[in-house]
Image 1: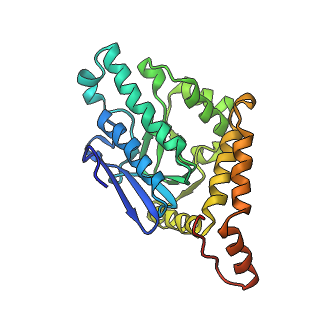
Image 2: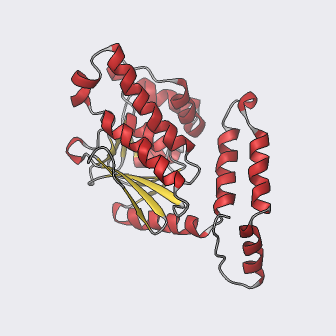
Image 3: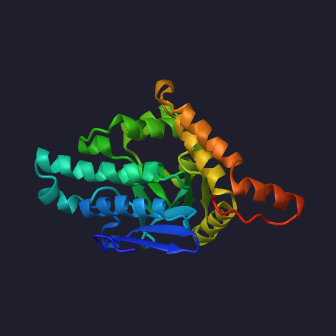
Length: 264
C-alpha cells in the first residue's frame, strides 16, 4: 500500500493487515505525516473484504510508539493554528482506528509512551512483550488530555489506576500493565510474534459478521446510555442470522469439519 511517508508501512498478508510505525531512530515517535498515513491505511483495510484482522506494531525492537515527534514541534506545532492542524490529523488517525469494524491488535515491544499508550488503547487487544515500559508523561510536559482518551483508559484500568498513571507520570512495567488490565497478554520477547500469529489465525477462521457485531456491541456498551444506537446493533445481529456464514457454521458443525466463512 502506498502511503504519504516512508515512516509508516502498511501491507497485507494472508488476510491480515499490518501497520508499522517506522521511525526507529526516534523510537517510533509519530509525526504529522505519520498520523495522516494511519488514517489512510485504516480506511484501506476497512474497505478490503479480504482483510479479517489488523495488527499495529513498531519497527525495530526498542519501541512500539514513544509519543509525538518533538523534533517537528518548531515547524508543525509552533502556533495555535498549526497545533489545530496537527490535532486534526491526529484525531482523524484515531477516528480511523476507532471506527475500524475489524479486530485491531497492538503488538507491543519496548517503550509505549505518551501518545503510544493512546495508540495502544485504540486497539481491541493488546499483546505485549515482557520488556515493555509504559508511561503517560503529560504532567511533566504541561499537556492536557481530552475526555475520550481518559475515558478509554479509565474503562480499562479503573479510576484509581488512571489517576496514578497521570498524577505520577511514572513508568510502569509489563507486569504492572498486565495486572491493571492495560494489556491482555504478556509473553517473553521471543514468543511475541508467535502469539500474535496465533491470535490472527484464530480470528481469521471465525465469522466476520459475528465479530463485527460483537465489537460494535462492546463499543456501544462503553458509550453513555443516551448515545447508544441499539437499533443499529440489532440490525447487525439480525444480519448474522440471515447470512450464508450462519448456514455454513451450522453445516460445518454437523459435518464435524472446520467452517469456511466468507463474511456474507
